Image 1: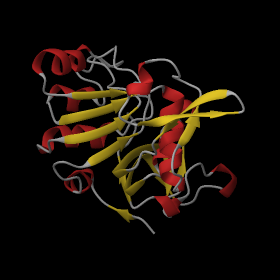
Image 2: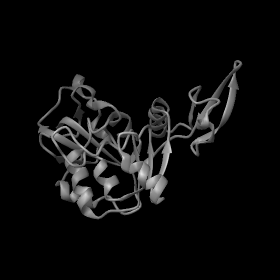
Image 3: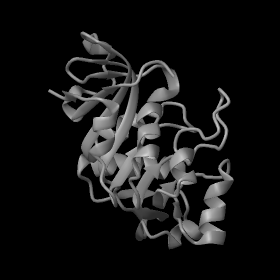
Image 4: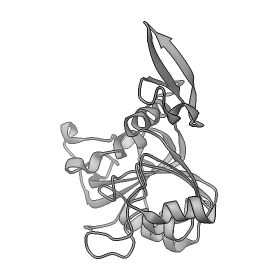
Length: 227
């Protein structure tokens, strides 16, 4: 059974220097309230694994949206992502200030690398990136030829914490996502030592066939409310 804690208590669980996976796609499906609490907590030197770094402006007029808050505060020392083009502060911190290390991985490859990390696999063989700079990526373990076709062996990804978000979470920690908010949340929940799930709404029980992430993966639940 997961522990139900406040957002402030959950933020205190993540120490300086931790490796954290954040679900979401440009803020869609992100744990907004917990990210906001982390942005005020002073935690620093994080290694973040996420699809992206979100963007400076949010859909409701926010100055910084989702992970952009942590980027702006320079709380991230290393960002492993699939694209960062909509957040210019990433480029500034990486190329001008030299305060942020950025590792870019093809999106589909990263999803499978996280899945491999959750499943205890030794890596992922994919043709994506063959003959490109992806071969120089620190998470590329080499190239293999199978039946005459070249593949890259990409390392599994695992984290100390995964911060995910669901539309509904029940008392057993089972998570239901609305529409595309499932994105990276599902695989990230399997690939971290500690999983913190933010719920828009906590319910008594989710019908078994509607469970997207089993409560067995969830360690802590916080109620964030509607965004």
